[in-house]
Image (cartoon, rainbow, N blue to C red; front, side, top):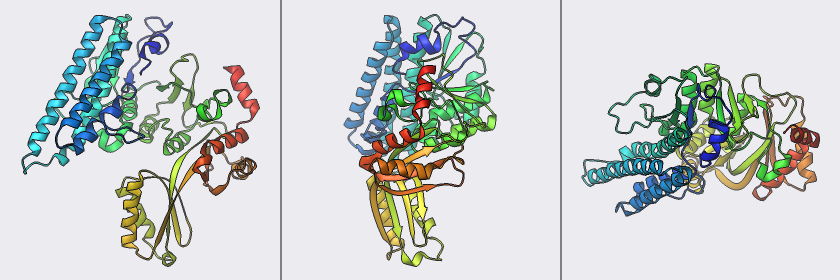
Length: 463
């Protein structure tokens, strides 16, 4: 979205005829970095408006953060919009939304000064309110930009701003699309929708893809397309090199789920489920290469006998050892309950007679709290933690590929120590546990082993 002006010439308009420009619906996310400023930084945890409001009694911290976010929004659309009148309208839009949000938060603080009211009960509502500001801003700016280029774009605000109703997601989408003529109008829809389900509570930051999927399903879309600034490729180009990656081309929803589990976020699992049930095909395309068909995700899956992607992430090995565990039920349930309660993402797990190891993604503080809770329940247990990296080779059907054996050989030849390895019976993924310092090197080694040079050469020639 931060390259909105480039998208006009590729994605939105380009060489399309006027008729080809319509019969489409665009669901947009916030401009880059804005949601981090409104909530908290997704990767570093650096506090934004929401996090400061949740911990700052004085009000100065969150108000400063709100001012900074508003200034950043205006700076972004000042670079995108070239006409002065459009900039003025966008400035006024930001001012109205941000000052409205400020008034809401100040009212909440005043209520919180009375003992009968508990702001904590409203914090999820605050998070929903703030998160919608970013999507509303980007959709409004994109609408202005497209209108200036001669397209009949229409701003569709699902954020519930100053709305006295509280509809379900289905009702919100039906109401928004009720009077739109797709043959002559181009809806630009906010990626956040205010509804009774509470999208932030259910999906956190995956809400835009959930809105996108439900809108595609409800409108009976011929195809749902996710536009990214890169192809869905065989590995991260930053790690293995752009010239060494291969566009996947076709894969399964099963693979998409594995990628989501590893933080790749090809699509949110819940969004994929909605599209799968509605039988709407999903395609991931490069936003700046509109002629390329991208990667189709569907029930047919990819070609069998091929590793489609090698990826990985840093994890914390959380090992629960208890000799008395043998033959006794409940240890696994207790560990799962504690990890879930402290909102730790379980990437993978292993177990044997007296040891259960979960490979976690989350803060060390949350992991320590879960550890204390489990040890309180099982004081004779021993819990050890180790920072590791999980590297995964993924494919639609790996039944006829000896990924585990060849992967171990490739890592051994690269001088990389493997702490553990496992593969499931579905033969969709093989996981290798290595030291954190070896994460990128392991990805490069496995990618070179399973994505032969001839596939890379063919891909470059086709491109």
